[in-house]
Length: 113
Length: 111
Image (tube, rainbow over all chains, first blue to last red):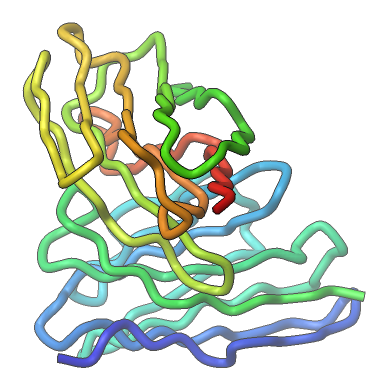
């Protein structure tokens, strides 16, 4: 069974640009959640999607958005990038939600210059 | 706001030593998960504890959930270099649908 796949692995952008990250969950998993990981703040919950609907959202500005497609694949978008957005972005999939066993991808390392 | 505080933040020990990592909060969690993350990879779930006072063992790792479900600990016996990594606790915040992560404990086990 294939694991959670995140693309791209690395990304370098400049301030003001926007970026789209992709996450393909494990087959059969309907929940995809996104997290931002930085050395200073640790792992912080961004949002969760289940069956194409955003079910929960963390405390991040509106520049951070996401969506989920009918095949459960999910994308995360960050607009008007700021230096502080540099982080490892992780997605995780599970059968039913964030309280169940989460399977994480390897993440996308975003650097904003 | 529900917070999870992990301690210590960093731990460097020799192979064969024992260690304990703590995860504390003033809030009650319906369950608590422990993950290990290696460089360049996403976290991998080690265990989930659900019942207050619950103790789970995974080979040399022992996990305990506090009676009041506000704290948890991870004890490693006879640590090995392969235990090196970032250990994260994560609490299921009751009725919010969110998972709250601790800051993590970076463990280095020297051969």
